[in-house]
Amino acid sequence: MSDSPLNPVDVERHISEVRERIAKGVRVVTDAEAKAKKLRREFDLAFAFAYKAAEGSIPDRKYQAQIDTIEEREAAETAEIAFNYAERTAWALKDELSAFQSIGASVRAMYESVRS
Image (cartoon, rainbow, N blue to C red):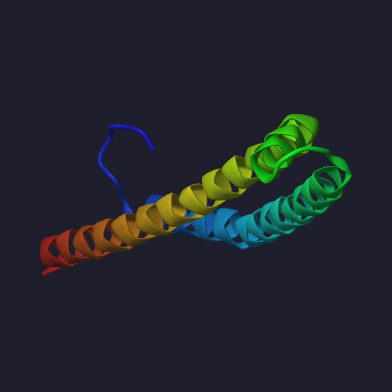
């Protein structure tokens, strides 16, 4: 939105745009969460197999499994970061919607007071 005075039509248009972005964001968040969970499961399984296949003491097996599955872990963590970003974006859009609903109420009140 520009720095020029707001009118109710502009505010409602912006509210409508934000609502559409929120609706589309639901799919983005859901897909990001599904991917993060899938990659976490893949990492857990790869770690379990690597741990089982490793030799040596328990700590040695653990460290070897961590080394052997670093790529799976990085993929899972990257997907978790993407999911968290999508969630934060969704919350920011909800906050933006709330702010513009408040602005809309103020703009309508201002226009109504001028008409009176």
